[in-house]
Image 1 (cartoon, helix red, strand yellow):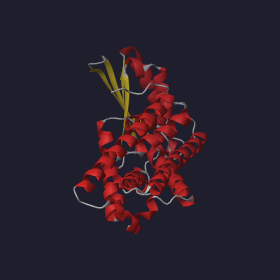
Image 2 (tube, rainbow, N blue to C red; image 1 turned 45 degrees about the vertical axis):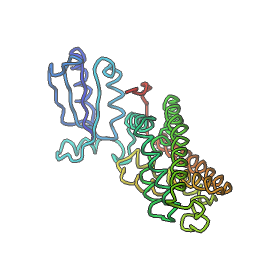
Image 3 (cartoon, rainbow, N blue to C red; image 1 turned 180 degrees about the horizontal axis):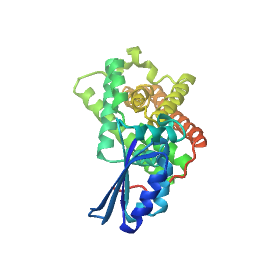
Image 4 (cartoon, rainbow, N blue to C red; image 1 turned 90 degrees about the vertical axis):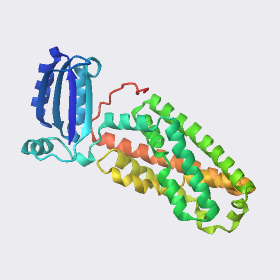
Length: 313
């Protein structure tokens, strides 16, 4: 279930209470009169079934609470209550399968922002991938996959395309279009410095066969990207977020970016080119599959997604 908090102007409180009281997917209704200081008003709280969240949020927004007050939601790990059980049973569908579209929009919007933290994680991931390539260590490659933050912007592009939220697509596109080239440039510099210092020999990649899969592009690469993209979006839109770790270590995005820079320093332009192609194939496959999953899930569930602008904070 989800815990809902709504800040209401006093003149909207009774309508809000009636809305929540009569909705079958809501339970544990609480009101604190005059509790909100900024903005001024009353605080209304309730626990709601995940599958009823969109209906309830849409109804609250018709009362203009997203402008005159505020609406927040957070997940509840445990709810021991007959009323909560009844609300979940009364709400249509399964909670684990329900997509809370506003939650998805907020999450992808936040994770697709290009900032210093995103850039640092992506650069570190590419550097780890380069180390894995140079040392012929598939374990290090897997570590680089896990560290890479690129799935957030990829999911945002898919969500933005399906929901026609082009502001989300633009934000995610900037994160990827800036993040990967900058990270690859940092990796190139790191490989050049390491080679000049005699720490490693980039030409050794010719004999490092455990990581050959990174630049070997084929139908399997696209299939894996499709499966990973589908699994990733299913995890993001359901209560199965633990599956995201498996997605991170399935796709060859960051490893391909790192391998391309090592191959470039070694003068193996064929491998560098194939690595870049591998990167593009994986990026496209993930976005395509994620978008298809969202289209299918949106057809199964009524959704009136709020067209609120993304937060700039």
